[in-house]
Length: 288
Ligand code: SAM
Image (cartoon, rainbow, N blue to C red):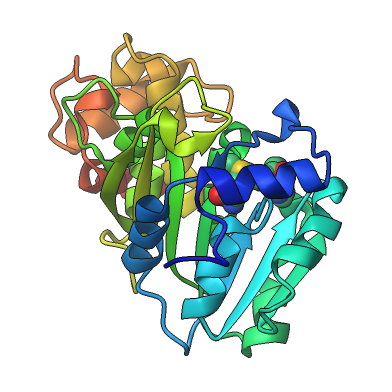
C-alpha cells in the first residue's frame, strides 16, 4: 500500500510533528513504521469485508488505516486522549472506523460485540501495549467474548511462551491457558527497527485462533487453572509440593498424593512435565 497510508517513517514523523506529539512510555507506545509488517499482520488476521475488527491501541492510526481498507467495520479503543484528535485527522477518509477514548481493560467487549456485530464473533487485531498483554488476552478468552481470532504483536518471549509445550523453559501457565482456548501460531518475528521509538525487546506477531470447543474436557475449569497456577508458582518443586503449598487449594497432603498416583504420574513429577490433557485429568480426579 502507498500514500496516504502512514506505515513508514516519513508519514509517521509528519503526523507526530504536526501535533507536537509526546510519546508516553507508560502506555507502551511504539508505533509501527514498516509497511511489510503491517501487510503481514492484516493478511495473517484473514480480514474480509464481512469482519468486525476490534483494534486495541490504534496510536496515530497506522494499522487502523490498513484494517479499515480490509474490514467491514473497525472499532478502535485508545487510552491516550492526546491521540484522539490525531486519529480524527488520520482516519477521516475511513467512514467504517469508530474510535473511543477508553482503557481497554474497562471496556465491556462482550456488550460491544452484541451492540455492533449482533453478538457474532469478532476479530481482534493489535500491536499491543506490552505492559498489559496477558490481562488483555486472558480477559478476551475468559469473559466469554465471541472471538474468532486474536492477531497481535507481542514481546517475542511472550509469543514463544504462548506457543510451546512441556519440556521447554518457556512452558508455563500462560502456554496452557492460551492453548486451552486457542490454537497459537507465530506469524513473524519483528525486530525493534520496525517501530518508532524502538522497543528494547524483540517482538513477534502471533495469531490465536479460538477453538470451537476446548481440546480437553474439564468438569471444573476454575479448579484446573488453580492447579496449573499452583504447579508453576514454584517451578523447581514437585507437583505434590506445589499443590500442597498453594493458598488457592485446600486438599490434604494425602489427597494430593493419592490423586497424583491415581492419574498414573510418578510421585516426584513436576508440573512442567504435564500436558494440558494431564492437567485436565488431574482436575477431573480432584473434582471427583
Ligand atoms: N497501533 C499503533 C501502531 O501499531 O503503530 C500503536 C501501537 S502501541 C504499541 C500501543 C497503543 O496502545 C498506544 O497507542 C497506547 O497509547 C495504547 N494503549 C496503551 N494502554 C492502553 C489501554 N489500557 N487501553 C487502550 N489503549 C492503550
